[in-house]
Image 1: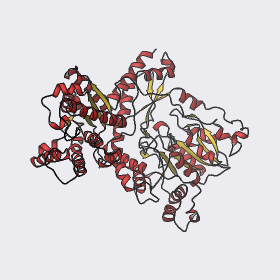
Image 2: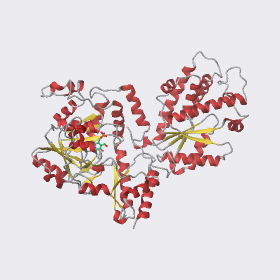
Image 3: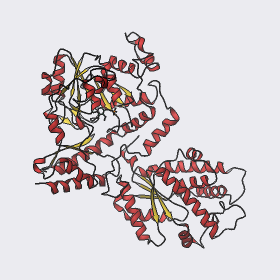
Amino acid sequence: MNDVSERHPFIVFEGTDGSGKTTLANAVAQALPERGLTPIARRQVATASPFAAGLMEHMATMLWHSGDATDLSDGFWAHLQAAWFTAHGEQVVAPALAKRPVILDGWHYKLVSALLGQGWSREETDHLFARVRQPDHVVLLRVDPETLWERRSGRLRPTEMGMHAAGGDAELGKASFLAYQQASLDRLSELAERHHWTVLDVPGDESAADTTQRAAAIVDALLDGRSRPAGTGPAYAWPHVDASLRGAVDRQLDRSLSDRDGSGVIGEFEQAFAEFVGARHAVAFSSGTAALHAMCVAGGLRAGDEVIAPAYTFFATATPFAYEGVKVVFADADDLGNLDAAALPGLVTERTKAVIVTHMWGNPCDMTAIGRFCHERGLLLLEDCSHAHFAEWDGRRVGTFGAMAVFSTNQKAITTGEGGVLVTDDDRYRELALLHGHYNKRCFKEIDPTRAYYPYALTGMGLKSRATTLGAAIGLDQLGKAKDIEARRRAVLAAYTDALSGNPVLSPVLVDPAHGRHGLYVAGLRYHPEAATVPIQEFADRLTRAGADFDVPGSTGIIADEPLFHRAARTDPWDTPPHAPTTTGFPGASAFIGSFLKTPLWGFPGDHAAVEHHLDTLLRTCAQVAR
Ligand SMILES: Cc1ncc(COP(=O)(O)O)c(C=O)c1O
């Protein structure tokens, strides 16, 4: 079960012996009362149970060769320690994370560093600690060994003097301490570089209050999803890589890296995706583009046929049709940037076989008008729902209006990293989609042998474009969190809508709520240049300079004049002069593009301050440019 509470951030302060992790973790938790950070001591299990405490003491003694001899090797105790960290992560940290963000005074990394110092390889330590719960953020406290010596001398245990590192006969003292500390710090710094941790250098003469203040600012930023202090640049990242996502990938690594049929994670993901959309079937592909290609072929479109597609969309809505030699006829956009239903009658010919729509930036198209038009003319209705995972039209999820629909899952509201999913209620379309990219074993198993196309089960139609199992594992984890993702993104969208109410410079681009619900890919905003003193690009640049993530989309524009749609030859078309584009301009699409901006909808724990920063920056910039 993935509920929202499982996704509170897990932060670790790491550092060498005596660097002040515990004191600082507690001080930072106190300095940020509104964050509700729970400081957990790394040794909580040991102190909670006298038996465990005794066992830990012996284990530490034996691990560091400082006590009774045992015939068990260091490796044995290292494995036991790794198991202890795994247990601590699952039994102490995880339940705490269900309630609040957690801050820990050190995790397994110091042990990793010690083992590396003993000659273990990175691969061995990675393997040893593979099941330990991974923090979302690690902050390395770097304190100069000389400073530590001054701070701590006289109160040092032999282990802290480097008794193990210095070798049996070496004299323990300042020299052994400094050598031991420096080696440990170097190895932790290497880990910091390798894992992109935040590093906090603590100078010897800095007051504890100042260190706490600096550390609290770092933790505050990390909890906001910012790796940099506010105001230095956008920091939207998706998906949020938390322990459940890492766990899903980790478990899948042990399970399978490639599924040849639907019996493993691919089938589980497809079933969950079909349920999510409300369709009977889902077929997972390596990309949305590959799924769109399968949709074109499964729909029976071929050279000489025509498909009506939006002039304004991401190009991959239409390029697979062009690849197959289908003529793409472009329709202008309405004021949401969607295919304008009113344009359809003027574009249809006797060769028109299908209409494909894109629910642009999350707003559903007018599926009543477009659906009626296709139904009356006997045209295949296809949907590109890549921007609209959570969209509805008249109470029905998009993706269920057409004969087939495709959802890209590349960095979209539900993501598999890279990928795409075709959904349909129709058994035949499902089988044809399988044939197009999932050939051989899966087709033999899942295609009805009485079908005319069954003899193609071995070879498929010549291409392979299966999804990866790791992507499917990520997608399943995402679908498990879909309710939380939707709730948070709707709340952020509502915050933009409320904040912009009555604003003369900017208004949200939103479907009429009487008919539709937004799909939550991005928040779309319309700029009103007549109410402002600067053009839209300057407005967007000012937002970017203020550290907010708003942009005028680049690669999504009017695609109708792209040479791919007008090529005279299917292969090497650049050797043949292209036909002149037949388009006459798309005033609806041009007007939409000229006034459109977008911004992320965020949707992960700790995004509140980032959202507030974006809203503040937006309102301030609007006020600055307003006429
Ligand atoms: C509307 C639309 N359709 C199709 C695609 C192609 O999907 P993919 O990048 O997964 O191939 C995208 C990708 O961004 C898209 O935005």
